[in-house]
Amino acid sequence: MTLKEVEYVNLNLTEQNFMDDDEYVGFATLPDQVHRKAVKRGFDFTLMVVGESGLGKSTLINSLFLTELYGEREVGSVTDRLEKTVEIEKKQLEIEEKGVRLRLTIVDTPGYNDAINGDTGVKSIVEYVDKQFEQYYTDETSINRRHIVDNRVHCCLYFISPYGHGLKPIDIFMMKQLHHKLNIVPIIAKSDILTKPEVNRLKQKILDEIDHHSIQIYEFPDCDSDEDEDFKQQDDLLKAAVPFAVVGCNTVVEAGGKKIRGRAYPWGIVEIDNPSHCDFVRLRQMLISTHMQDLKDVTSDIHYENYRAEHIQNQIGTTQRERTKLKRDSMIDGTGEATEKLLQQKEAEIQRMQAMLAKMQQQLGHKDSVTKPMNGLAKTESVV
Ligand SMILES: Nc1nc2c(ncn2[C@@H]2O[C@H](COP(=O)(O)OP(=O)(O)OP(=O)(O)O)[C@@H](O)[C@H]2O)c(=O)[nH]1
Ligand SMILES: [Mg+2]
Image 1: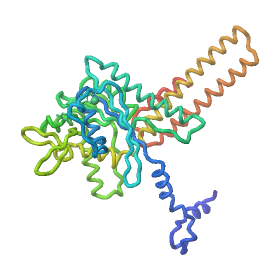
Image 2 (image 1 turned 90 degrees about the vertical axis):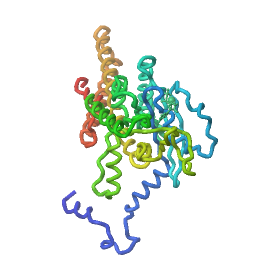
Image 3 (image 1 turned 120 degrees about the vertical axis):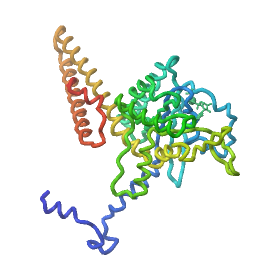
Image 4 (image 1 turned 60 degrees about the vertical axis):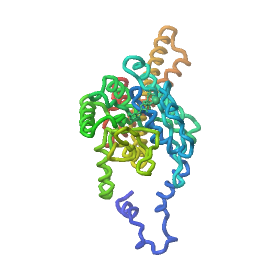
């Protein structure tokens, strides 16, 4: 294409060019088309809660979504809600707001405990996350790819104890097991037991330790420069709130004739929806109204690509071993025509996968958002 032609194509199709509406090419409706299609298809989002036992994980997810959704229903007695989670529980909900459907999956995990089930707890959670990637990969590479259900974990709320002095060894270990697989959003649990200065101190301590141990938590994207001042201010407040200090509860208390969701103590009420009491509202705002799509994009573009690269690399390793074995056997038994053909097939397969990896590496290299080391891709050279 010549330069002149490029200039022609770049002409702005505004009213000056086309006086009559009928003469528009029509691609200005593309955003509407994309919007309509997305609304029709609905949205999937999977949230996981992880952390030590008894920190209020199940309570918080109930506070975040379930109680509101089942608002009409009779709330069970308090003891119903105090049970310890003993296995990974997946809860699925469909929420509809102004015609937009959201399929929300909440993965509640059993809390671990340094002494008792630390290792097995960690292992089963990591396995769960990997299994979702594996399923997605299988679906994506299968012939019928039309109705893939995305169960990949898009966000992990990691609960940190308010009783300690920062991260515990098990927290560091667990976050390191997970940080290249999903978006970790750290949470200070049960923050009602801390005073404001204590919360601030603990937040800083946790952030320092996260940095010191090179743990990669979810990084909030920079705000677009064309956003309005109000939005930018909200965004700054959100970023400054990490790790979110939350309070969870499923009880409604009466105060001054008003019904409030909160925890009633002899000395007063902690309102979970009050931003000056805790960061619950900010966390919900971030998860639902402002960062859901970014969490999904990072999952897909970085964590899943990491998994895919590692997976392809493992496949290359297996095929290379098969090829070596074939070669060795053929040296002993002599090379038949069938073996020769098989060897060529293996060679072609290895080359195809290596090309795929190189392409992924190149694509990811161009993305500004890639700040994390690519687990799988980093090893590419040793295999090729
Ligand atoms: N003070 C306070 N107590 C809370 C809070 N959230 C939950 N609790 C209480 O903490 C206890 C444990 O809550 P759960 O939600 O079962 O904790 P969990 O993290 O799911 O525990 P596991 O299922 O064992 O992993 C319950 O008695 C809750 O009422 C909170 O924000 N502040
Ligand atoms: Mg629980």
